[in-house]
Image (cartoon, rainbow over all chains, first blue to last red; front, top):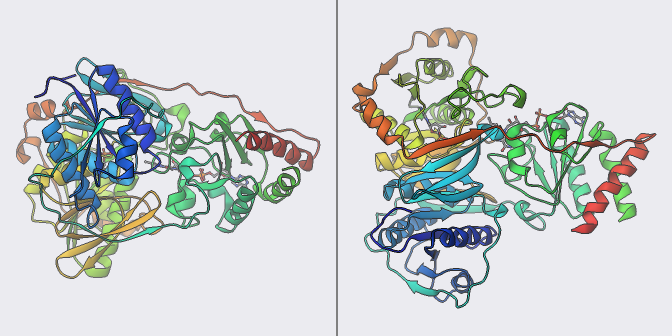
Length: 324
Length: 268
Ligand SMILES: Cc1cc2nc3c(=O)[nH]c(=O)nc-3n(C[C@H](O)[C@H](O)[C@H](O)COP(=O)(O)OP(=O)(O)OC[C@H]3O[C@@H](n4cnc5c(N)ncnc54)[C@H](O)[C@@H]3O)c2cc1C
Ligand SMILES: Nc1ncnc2c1ncn2[C@@H]1O[C@H](COP(=O)(O)O)[C@@H](O)[C@H]1O
């Protein structure tokens, strides 16, 4: 990749402690191997934290910052930390996950480091000194390869669909840096709220049952929830159902919602717009219940039932309860 | 409060898959395969601004960078009750990347009266880049929050921005002026302009600047837009054939469906 101040090419990974970190670390590790460079992982928090230790199994080096004031403004805290560390490490690429904070700081980091940025990478490869990112565009109707010509290439990736990292012997070193001269913190996190959800997160679910506008209102989602309970599934929704206020936005699956990859995705009264497909195309099996046999969702299904959901959901629940 | 909303005109993102096509360059969608329209998240942003204005007073300006046709998006913004509209005309025939766009927007904003709040959409439904808002904040040297779906004043000098997160929301206090990118929610569905307001919109001020007038040359723009270079664009093939569940009766079909589901559920 491009010539930096250092002779060794560096791939930096910004790791937060969440379900995205395994795939993200895997992506960083593979890319570093491909370019014959070093894999540096940035972790906020104390040098001796459990997470820093966990990450060190996969990385050449772990850089932490225990003085970062992430509590009052996590986004600006991370931004300052990563920008300051990157000025010292001079990475050719900086990889982030697909969570809110990563998406928020990606363009800002690129600007501060005079690099280039893009999001939602499905695949990343080095080419002629630069990164080439593969991503879905036009709401999933096309796929593009985009070359980031200005290093560092700052990219957030679809971490959940990436293979995890493999353990390295020996573990990487863990060192703390100070932020140096960082720009001031201007925003303040006042309050934070997590929607109640039983069981696992949508991104990690093995079975997902989603509902769409064709359900006609919020009440049928209660039947979908009862059905989900029987087969230990989580519930999701189309954007239309979320926009109508029937279910929280954290349920939205798609281009601008969650990217999921369960063993089974059951779409009930969802038409299958390309933007919805973008969020669930990695599912192992897709099934749908829809009154319209020509609904685009069926093009993505292994099996489907053309029927009014009203006649299906409750008897299906009873049948599943009986045979499971 | 003085609010700027950035509107991007894009190819209708809901064009059916069968109508979608790539143009002769092989690097962008065929502009003739669908209508041009305002990106939905920009309209969510304008709606958010309008509600702030309705509740607390102020003025809303809409800004777009693009070919002559962006006037339609700006006129619609005026019909929704924005007060003023500005455009930077792009005659180059190319769509610049987010970095170049943010530069142009920042230059245009520099020529206007100061704003308390600058809004963009979270991402545009064409390339789905989602980069312009954050880049624009850096160009302007302002704080930034992404995925905001609600804004309220906090005293005279600050705003509370509600940000959608992976699991719920954050409330962030930010000093004015601030840049925020807006996402969709159940309370910012864009209003439909009244016929009367559509007519009146034609009389509201719409200023068009050339690139030179905002202080950037076509060469500079071309150099800037090399940061994210499109190498390949292709249409993926549709995949599986769906097996439609059959049965003699509805009960039969539901039994068959249940069997299929159970087979997968047992394997997880
Ligand atoms: C930039 C952008 C980003 C977007 N991001 C997303 C995203 O992240 N996620 C997302 O989902 N969408 C997204 N969309 C919106 C997307 O384009 C569609 O508008 C949306 O997915 C439609 O939701 P739906 O399928 O629930 O509704 P509809 O398209 O209205 O489909 C309803 C379906 O229900 C069926 N139906 C009706 N009655 C019944 C019944 N009684 N029984 C069974 N079936 C019935 C109908 O046949 C129809 O197929 C985005 C759009 C844009 C422009
Ligand atoms: N040409 C443009 N003119 C005005 N606003 C734009 C333009 N391009 C991007 N934006 C703004 O930036 C947001 C995100 O766009 P993007 O980064 O292209 O996904 C849009 O919703 C707009 O608010």
